[in-house]
Image (cartoon, rainbow, N blue to C red):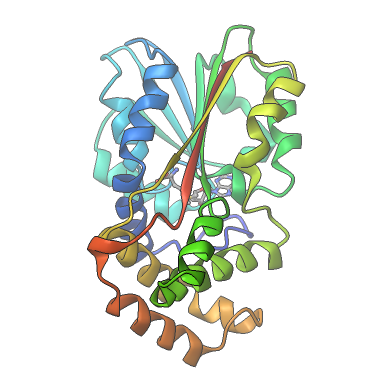
Length: 271
Ligand SMILES: C[S@@+](CC[C@H](N)C(=O)[O-])C[C@H]1O[C@@H](n2cnc3c(N)ncnc32)[C@H](O)[C@@H]1O
């Protein structure tokens, strides 16, 4: 198994399935970001942290035969899954740590990343150096999850007659604490628009939306627990029996009656 040390979630086929579920959650926002970036058929696009390729597939759908998509990821397993799933000569899988801003960035017309910056320690340093590395006029866009904002509404609902929603909050605490235990910020998206402006990017537009809350959201949460159970236990975030109990409580929820448990930040700009 080859991957750059540090990615705290899974690299397996199950992890890829969880990311495919996540793609369904991110569908609207992903398409809106690609609209914001006005992709052209011949663009050379560099995708940060492409993983198993579900966002890549959306990008390739907008490229012509002369376009290219350089998918950069620190997990060889996930890159291989992307190459197999996409089976597209325009897709160039590239095994690298995005923080190195390597030669794979040369000639980029567009740089995109979905749900990757929150895996990079102090990601603001990366986006600042990125601006200096790119040619003027390069379009840049990111989508980042928001595991915090919806919790206020969730807490209000729990405190005013819906105590059964507690496992959604426990799950949100678990994922936040997992990131914090690994010294990475689960909330980098919240300040990204301003960070990009501060770094001198132009035409910076940010947006926030709620994620869908349904049976897929619950499935995503159950899979997250399966994927990182051992890490949650070894880091002291949760005990194994607590994970099992939270999974039981999540399964017992009525998926038709759930508030959003997480949100999405989207930001587009140019150098
Ligand atoms: C949550 S997944 C998102 C995958 C994909 N962008 C999507 O939206 O389906 C994060 C991805 O970023 C990759 N990643 C994390 N840190 C990275 C780094 N420093 N360099 C390259 N890839 C990284 C992981 O291997 C993983 O594939």
